[in-house]
Image (cartoon, rainbow, N blue to C red):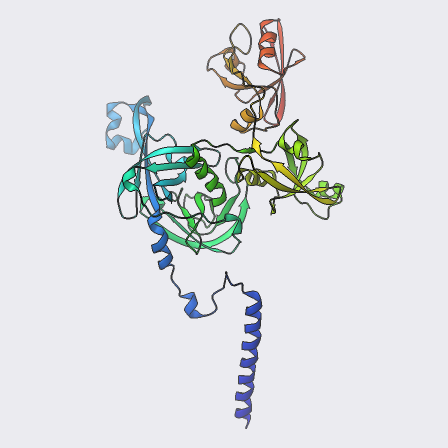
Length: 477
């Protein structure tokens, strides 16, 4: 009797567990993204997906000529190099051929390939090797150092290649499964799996409009330019960097989102020149102190602190003190994230920008246009008996500031180049210096600076901005 009751109770509890678990699962699971529910599902294979996408991922081999070092014939002997190294008793000399490797993704059936700019930078010869071992010489269609993206094309004989379609990287969620495909350490095409660990990672690369996808799929040297693929076989990112102290994968890899990559690809298809939208405003992150002063419950968005006269933001009705919270419905948390969102859009379109103004939500229409070169740069090499002899200067404009990757709100005269050994070089003027004043006169344009330099006074007093610092230089003739 007791055994019968025990069995009956056990069966009842199991039925209750199944009902409760089934109801919970029905609520928790979405039709598109399902957590494995049993052992059979756990043992599912990625092999069909790999067979589908792997042929669209290629190995990239780049050759570049670099300035080598000249050694005496004695130290060309391997025995001496073993003990004394390659650099002892050497000097700048003969050129050498340097090889690099990476990966690329075919994104058009006519042979258009995406890779990282750093993979092919300075290359004199580029070879693309497909997964079926066919080899093609490639030409560079477009390079973009800011996004670290390069577009290649293989010759016409490779037409009809298998390619990957772009996914909407904005649809990614933390926890989504992804595959990384590339050529790590030159061992050949390799597939690794992982999840999306984080989204919109900024301050990872060297500036530029970046908001990386972070993944724990193993990415190693040689994976650069390879594919980050979703479970439906679409390209969601281009693998580009790792966080590592040893050079190997530590489970923190970064990929350029497909929505930014596709903009560069479209530019290559339409003419090979990238024209980015210009926002025309300066901002800063909202800190806890700023949030409190604005009456916000928590830090959110970007505070508008400056507007370029006549720029798109001013024309759209932005005001200093507005807090930008979203671009086309996508939240932004920092300045880099805002730059990324604007960079994924195209000129001659309209973006919907959500802002908080005095605690009230508003939506402004931002008509996107390219940064203007006003005033014209008027690139000028300075000569004569003065401290800036040997410097090259230009008028700052939003277009030039964007080109130089500095604040597009900056105005005035900027040093673009300094000739080695010149007076400007000896007196430590540097490219990027913005001349603010000369002998207590505000400098607005190149012509004005040239006139002031021709006055040749005995004492020279310069006020300039170098990065975030304002410096004062004084010289006597």
